[in-house]
Image (cartoon, helix red, strand yellow):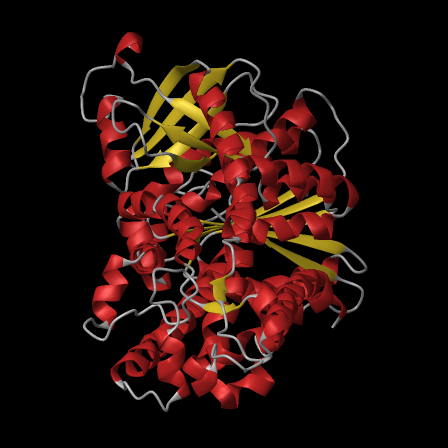
Length: 565
């Protein structure tokens, strides 16, 4: 239970607070619309009034959170502040994308409720106009304000129209359609299958949030839902005058005709803060974009992995951080995230880019990857860098025992960590708080090992020379090979070092038995907080998360951290 609180406690607390705020706002606005000011509006619309307005008010609170959660420069500043004080608080920033999605789902839910309620509203508005019976209060209320004044209650001013025409000829209707379409496109294009297979579609449609926010600001200007004015309430008490509607405004009555007005637009007050933050974020990115980046070296690895080594004046990084890379010759709008594989101690920064999509394929060709001859330096494409930005891996040296798990190209943040370890031990002789690293690398095919094996071999040799052979324990798994295929391969390639990687540690086949691995680690490090870091698929993350919870006993705490982009 204690480890569950350490891993998930603060996250659950934040979500509960957020849900509690949403629930409080719903109840508060629901009660607000039960007051006398909205008496006649309820006569026309019934309960759909509250279910229309309440989501709209709650709706205003959530879009600003969505922007804050993905403001990378802001998040990096927050990470620096919270990281100095609390490791648990800093880890919550690694879950910003998860919370971003939850808030987006809440926005979608309230949008659906708001739209459904308005569908009922407009049917009721239309019915009140069609049923032209002066003995009905709904008809009398619908006729108020027809003499060229704005004190009407029913926005449908004639019975010779229909809700569809009203939808596409009013400010509220048009902006509502625009907002809904933008939201549908943003959410559907964010599905993992689209985001991973067609990143450009995800990237472009996500920027429809600008249209979404503009539509949101102007949506309230139509003032479709109206209530009785405060001045009218002092002269016309709806509780006393509702039954006297046939004599409203006549001589000798104390019930003058009620006057109605809509609330002034308030959404801009909630939107202006996030939009200022977004503009500041864009200005920071523009400044970084204008800074010159020099590509000092391009390495084409056999596994169709492109390594870019770069320099930029004033660039400073920490282990495990990532940058966004843009190549103007490919696209002026697309920025793609890549983990830095260099160490802070190096005089350059580098990224390993696996060629898996249109943009990476274009970059590969621009760097001469499809040519046999060496590309001249002056022919290399210009690139722009935004970052670096913090990730969970920044905290790796704050744990005495560390478990690193990388899947495929997900090993990249750990390349930076292991390189930094190598520099700290071999060049600066710097003391490292971390005393033990367990490294697991899961790869589907042998080609994926090629670019990283040299680093591991160098680190293996240096640790042995320094008498720190036990500092790093690593296990490399070839997940798509079966044990009988591997046995046949080993028979024909008997050697001291592994025939695939060239390392002393033999390659393993299949998938790790995580239950056994965590049991062994816990037994060897009683009373220790063990940091578990993953860069890999969600399914593997869930499995490791469960292992961290189930094996935190006997004084051992496994703290789970996952990279999120």
